[in-house]
Structures are given as C-alpha cells and as structure tokens.
Length: 261
Image 1 (cartoon, rainbow, N blue to C red):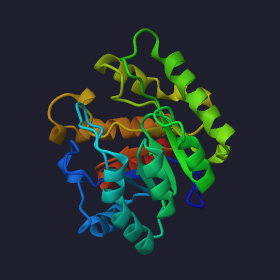
Image 2 (tube, rainbow, N blue to C red):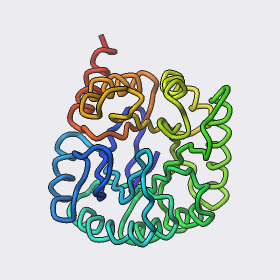
Image 3 (cartoon, rainbow, N blue to C red):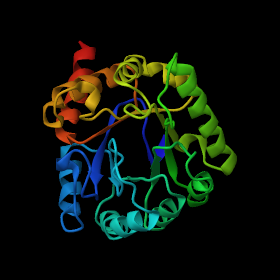
C-alpha cells in the first residue's frame, strides 16, 4: 500500500493514535496544539510508521462535533506536524469537508470509520486529493448472524466506490471495525477470524487498542492489546492502530523474531 509516497508491504506497521479531542476514552492519547509536536516526535522514536490524527471521539455514546469543529481542532496541529516531520499522516474523519481541509494541509490518508457511506462526497474528495484511504466497516444496527459476509460485502462495496471515484487501488486498506456495530462475542469472532477479510482484496488495518472487548478498565487492557497485535502479525495485517506505540512496536518485533526460530 502507498501512503504519502511511502510503500508499506510484507510487514505489520504501527499507526500511532493522537487525538486532538478533550473526550477520547483513553486520556493518554489526547494531545493539544501545544504538545502535539512532542507527542508525534515521541511516537516516531517509539516506532510509529504512520500518525493518525483525530479531532472527533468515536468512543461509545460520544457526542458528535461538526466538520467545522474538527477542522478548527486539526488545521494548525496538522500543518505543524507536516512541516516538522517526514512521516505519513492519516486523519480520522467521516466528513468530506474536513477531509478536504485536511488534505489541503498535507494529510496523506483519510481514515473513515463509516467506510465512505456517511458522506456522499468523501470518495471523490479523497480521489481528487490523490490521498490514500482506510475503509472501516460500520453499521447503524449491531450485526447478527454470520458477520463475515456482511462485513466483507460492505468493504467490497465501499472499495468499489473508492475505485469508481478515482482512488488508486494501491492506496486502499480496509478495517473490520472492531467495537463498531458488534457485540463482545462478535468482536472476538472478528478478531480471531481477521484473515478472512483478506478476501476483500486489500491490505488490512486492525484497531483493538485498549477496547472494551478486553473487559476491565481501559488502563488494564494493554496486555490483551499486545496479544491482539501479535495475532495481527501472524495473520498478515499491515497496520495496527494503537495508543501505546513503543509496547506494540516491540511486540511486533518479538513476534517476527519468534517466528524465525
């Protein structure tokens, strides 16, 4: 996959979550305009290959903010990060207005938790900017029955929408959407069968970091997150989107070393 002119393949890479929000569920991921450069620098040192900036929390029961508020939160930090660091930057938004503004300020990828279905202009905006896209599965009602045909069907349709708009096939990856429109049992089904998403035909991104499927409190979920990252390596996932960059980077390294013996 190509993101920001860089090629990602045959490995599992760390995407670092940096939230420009006051209400994201994991407080350690929150950054401000004043400390975002420090946070990005640390993430790069810790092994991040991509930075994912978010200006809207999509935690359970979140209160939506507008595209204009997302842009207000994003524009200065994004421009500063792109001016200072040579690393691809993804922006987490499902609003085409925010995506357009982000791409104008240097964003290399749009990470859409509604998989190009929330905003009818999103695919065209991404294509016209020459940006990459992560298409995540989501639904308005929780999935029932066999989840994989439903998830893969959604991802295939959205990928076709991206291609038809002019997004290059080598700039698309897909995310099964763990924690979105799925109960705990189905989140585990999805994680344990994540390689089945490969039939969609695009590289995979996994987002499990400190999510409620692991039980307990968010501060106690790092060990389970690391186990899911090791599983991602074994299943050939391209990106893991995480809060704890150093620990996940080390888990990936250890898993590759273990598999070589």
